[in-house]
Image (cartoon, rainbow, N blue to C red; front, side, top):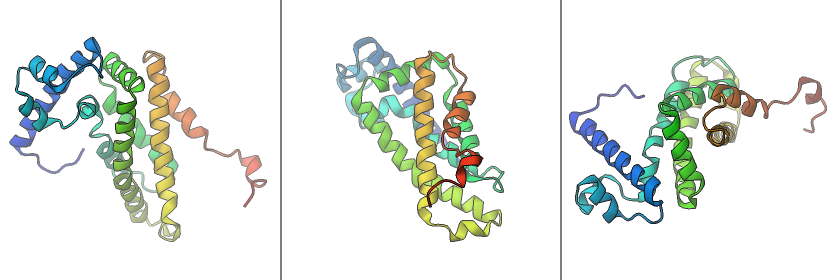
Length: 211
């Protein structure tokens, strides 16, 4: 995560949001996402509706609170070293940092991912978050590769890094979905390796590929 100092007020705000999200998630699991209102959430949390809304503007953001730092986690992992390696390898390792961050409680994450999968509004909002992370991740990928004295990076079209990051993020969600469907039993590292390998062209076929 960022090394920038965090004020006590921000720490306190994060703690309150985490507690409200925990209470709300339990209510969603008990009653159903679409059936729960902000009035229900505020009552369960013991705060006023206006107070709850100061911390979360939508029900979707309450559920997806756990994913908020993922973009920064990936970007920071890209900046942590290994800038002389291939972009795809670096993105693979950065996603390892993301899943390590997310999988602190296997059953909790499996339940969250299950709720997202069955709720179109949550799927759509998570896609919005993913799109918002991409520019920062692309910038860090380009920045660290350039600092490693790789001249080709400066000359390549900007769209290349954008596409690679978009593909990597898609790999992340597909892998998390399969992992969740297994009840958290499959190995995430193995799934990530398989997902990234799907983009690798066998050496014997590369010469035959169309230009």
